[in-house]
Length: 241
Image: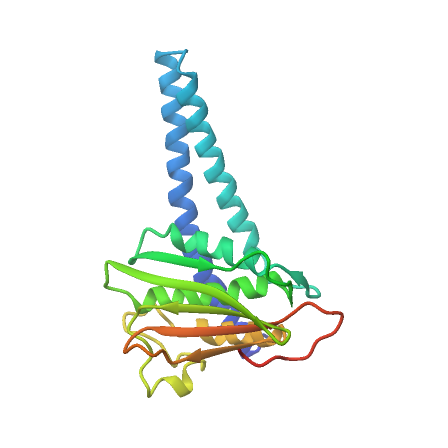
């Protein structure tokens, strides 16, 4: 029988699959239409090679990108942790959200350089945790036309911290103490169940790290910090930066 943590993660992965499937379906439909347009054009003008090459190249890139996204999230993450480049965790997750066709049009500011030291983690776990944090930001900005999410990283004393900041409404003071409890941040309408942040913290802690909410100086907005260990042969749990 599944325990509560396993049930929460299964529910979160179902929500994650829904978001990814919507994006994949949209992009693959566009890619298929592009291939069809190129095929029709060639029937009328066989010399249409330049546009054919450009169109097929675009369709191929879209399909391969979405295949990569699906593969990244196809399994719940297992096996022993290894050295992981934080940029390899961030890039595919941001790509999924940057191409969302529902909700606000969000501008991403990403500053996670590849010169950062590798972290000690299961990459799929941290990707799922980041997905949950970003989905929380998107849901918080529901009803708006635009938004902004900044993702950055810092290194200090053997700890690599990933910082996610949004310009949403922030977290009410009465909710903050229970923010990472299952269903505590549930929103009306049934579209946001309030389990993502709970799952994200479980995944961060399962990799020897932490996930914390930090109030911002501004009147609105939210700031989440996921701290992970630098890759070493052995490491202990870390505290956020």
